[in-house]
Every structure is written in structure tokens, then in C-alpha cells.
Length: 415
Image (cartoon, rainbow, N blue to C red; front, top):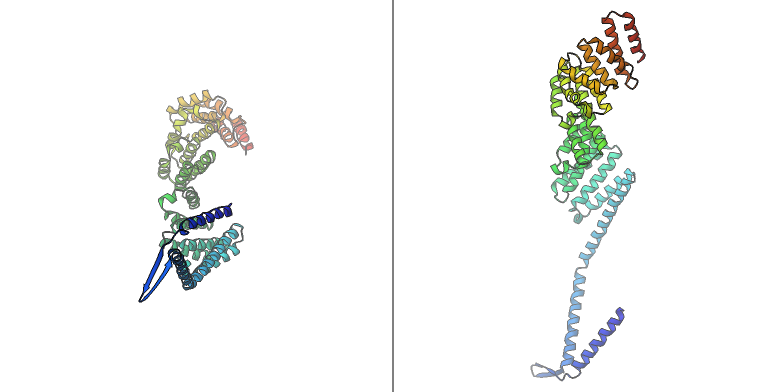
């Protein structure tokens, strides 16, 4: 098809030349001193076109000859650039393939090629990536001095170059991850703290911060970070709920006095304070520190509306109240008896109400509920043992030594 088009164009040019030049009778006269030369206009035009073609060709040839060294230099630079890029790609392939020694050598080779070529030295992003690959390979090989040196070079270069700024963010995230592998939580938190605010709120950065705060035994900060991750859908809903609850437990367990425990409880989000398991754990901790009123106060909302709780949540709240039963006031009795009537077959509720009645010296009602809790096979061993011990104490107060011994024996069988 292309040849046909060329033939058509050639025929068109031939027809145009024959129709214009064939009837052209013009002359071109040249005078030089006493000489005169007459040539036809057609010949003059052809000679002019030929002269122009020769001049242009000569200029191009001269330019090509003069620029030959420059083009040779550019070709050598391009070849070294391709070699450096190939070395970097090979380092990436070897790194992802788990061949870290080869990856480190390829990255070093890429850096050597770039250093030997001044024209490539301005590609700072390439240099930073090569240093990071070499540092990552050294980290996998447990060569920490080489890793730290390569990382330092990458960070220094990325700070001085705007083009490598994104590589600096990656370098800091990698350094934080490596610090966590070294179990160095302060170093990881320091590196994460130097990140820009937008980068620090990325999912990967939040995951690293969560690991660092947990490693550094900072459950309150870990709880805040985990909540941000849950908001960004960094976990599934079930996993996020379990993680937040476990971090709340850790925060409560770090409190060594009641004032510190109150501060921790006050820093919780409302959703955490509405968690029955968290409230029960807080009540257990407060009771262990002797703050029984505070423990009962944190549990009171759950006993005022127990219908919204599941079986496991009721059991946790009930056991939390059992641990904080000392000094319970008479204002608790109506809501406890209402809960016992609503959940007459719930052993945990029966245990909590029975302990409260026993604390208020209402022995008859207390004995019936405690016997129900002690005989509830669905209840865990520890609450049942608590019920038997309470029954033994009631029998001892009533002077029934045989019954007290039988209750102690039943408690001992539960382990």
C-alpha cells in the first residue's frame, strides 16, 4: 500500500513538472565584469535546488563529525545507566527471592557504577533506593553495622534532595520496622515520631506504632493507636474488638494504686467503659487495691439494666461484683433481687446476689442462692468454689461443724 502511494505521488510530481517546466521559456542572465552568461530558468532552478541539497548535506556531515565525541560519550553514559538500572533490578529480584547476599552485592554494584559516572550522580532517588536495598539485605543477614551505615547514608541523602523525599518516608518506616525486629521500642517510636503527620496516620505506620507501644509497655498509647487502626479498618471488627479489650486490660493491670487506676479509667473512651468485660476487670483491680466503692460504682450501670447483657457478660459482671462485695450497701439489694428474679437460672447472678445478701447478713436468702450457684455445672470452677466457701462460712457461723466440713470438702474437690 505504501509503495502504491509513493508511485502516485511520483506520477503527480512528474505531471506537475511537465506542465510547468515544459513551457517555461524564461532566462536567467549573470554579468561578471565583461562577461555575460545566459541560462534557462529551468536549469537555474535545478542547479539552485542541487546546491542547497549539497550545502545542507555538507553541514550535517560536518556537524556529525564534530559531535561524534559527544555522542560517543552519551552512548557510554547511557550504557552505564542501563547497567546500573539492571543491577538495581537484579538486587530487587534477589531480595524478594530471599538471596540477601546476592541482593546486597547487586545493590553495591549499582552504587559503584553510579559513583563512577558523574552524569548519574544527580539521580538521588536511585542512590537512596540502592542504599535501602543494601540496608535491608544487611538486616536480613543480621549485619547491623552495615545496615545502620547504609540507612544513615540513605537518610542523609534524602534530606538534601526534594526528589528523594518519598524515599525518606520509606526509609524511616523501614528503620522503625527493623528497630522492632531488634526489640528496640524507644528507637522505633523515635523514628515514627519524626514522620510527617500525614505519613504517621497511614495504616502501615499505625501498625508499627501499635507494635512499638505494646513492646514498650505503653498500653494507653497502644489503645489509642489501635482505636485509630480500627477506624481506618486496619482490622476486622471482631479482631479490633478483641484487641481493644485486651489493651484495656493491660492498661488496667499497669495501675499500682487507686488514683492511677482512676486516671486510667477516666482516659478510656465511653465505648470502653460500656464494655462489661472491661468494667469487670476494672472492678477486680479496684477491689484488689481496696477501693470497693469505686469498683461497685463502675459496675452499677450494668446491674441497673442487665437485660442488655449476654450470658458471658453477665457472668463477668457478676464475678466482678463478687470481688467488690465487701461493704455493699442496702441500696444495692433491690436491683440485685430484681436481677436474680429475671435470671433465676443464672449461676453467676445467683452467686453475686447470694454474696451480697450474706454480706448484709441475710443468711436464709443467701444460702438458697449460694447453693444454686454451687450446684450449677455450667459455672466455672472458681466461682463454684467461692460459693462452697461462702456456704461453709455460713455453716460455721451457725455452729454446724459437719455441714461446714462438707462444704469445705466440696470446695476442695473443685481444685
